[in-house]
Image (cartoon, rainbow, N blue to C red; front, side, top):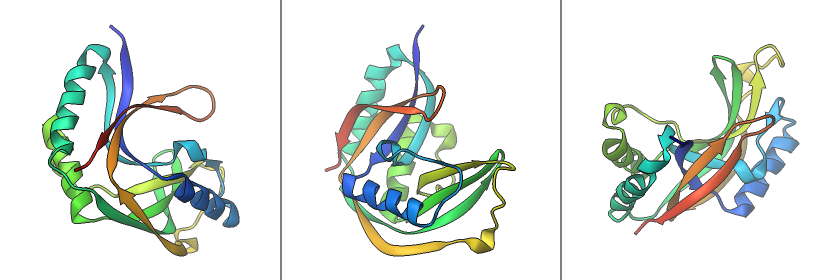
Length: 177
């Protein structure tokens, strides 16, 4: 049976992607920069999902988005996050009740075992493998001019891993009411 590595994401407008890439370059972020076309805010990672499950998954996401209005998020600085295999540099996104509600509803509907717990909304700008750069938390954050993000839809995306950066493919957008 075929499967896809899926996640639900908030797509970003081109102007914000350009601004964030410019900030990454301006601050000379180390590591492997995320290609602009891959910038997004993850709502929920689904993982390997059988192709046969896609129609019902799409119905479930539709059911959630019909009851959620669009909302605003804000990004305003680059922060360092330590991870097992190294570090990640994120454009920090200030959380909101609307974002938390969206995540909770998606998780409750699609992955009830993970419906509780907090989420740190962010946009991954760069990944630094362990030992490749000497990053110190006191070097961060790098503030920048506050940028609003109008969230009027979410998308079901596929992540294809291979050599180089992952390739993200949008399968379906779901407008928020």
